[in-house]
Picture 1 (cartoon, rainbow, N blue to C red):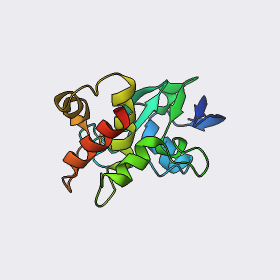
Picture 2 (cartoon, rainbow, N blue to C red):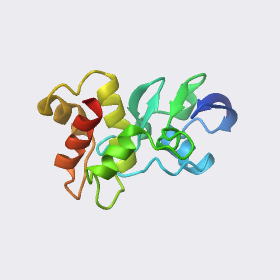
Picture 3 (cartoon, rainbow, N blue to C red):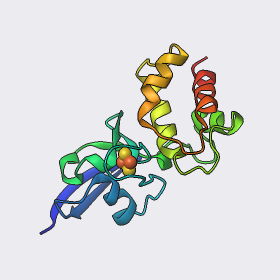
Length: 152
Ligand code: FES
């Protein structure tokens, strides 16, 4: 049986009706058609599904949608302001921070959180913070460069 859920996603308020077992990731992708957030592993191992909940990064495959009542969710779709990309998106492009791009939305959401949470003070600190975001293409050095560029 579906239950009511109020959420703000990327600055817009929604009144939804969801099944209690649905993850935030599936709600975003399947019910709200926000497919920028990716499903890699669906069990907390890859970081492709990273979003912000009330400004903190979370693996959206690990949390139930119904637990987010009243919260504010930001996805990759919410970072750009109209035609202006977020500085982190610009930096990923400039530094070649991706190849296939599948992990990129999650990488960027984590990268934004990395700076916001003050964990971008050294290469080691950045690598540590970003260690939950896996990239099969091995774009790691360029991702670190992108974060350092935005930080400085
Ligand atoms: Fe959520 Fe991999 S899909 S961590």
